[in-house]
Length: 113
Image 1 (cartoon, rainbow, N blue to C red):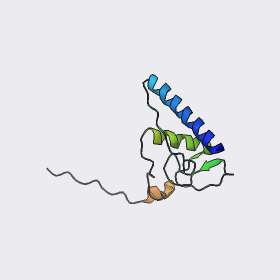
Image 2: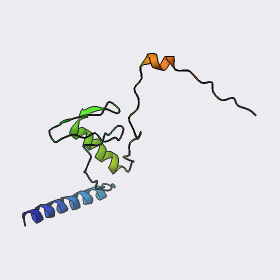
Image 3: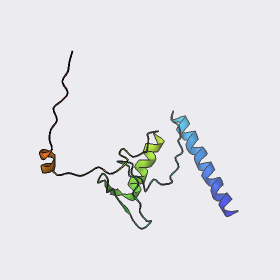
Image 4: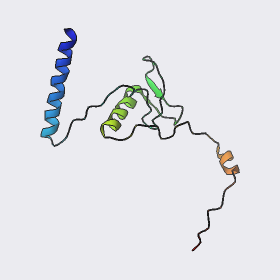
């Protein structure tokens, strides 16, 4: 019974939010919060952490942010309807400036016409 009281309170709160959003010419979007602290809000990769971990450190893109801030950005992105899949399916390789300069530069393709 205790759970039903909480569910009713949340339902009423969501109904009031929906009403206020509609009266302001906006719409309320409900977002599933599951996994929002694990997903990097910059690159979309999953970065596993425990409840004790309060900082989000992404080894893929280098984003360093508070765990709750990262989750809030993910909820905002999902609410706006943007995709939340990783930009890169695997981590990008990190190279030094010297390595980049040593790479052979290919000539651009010639335009024929």
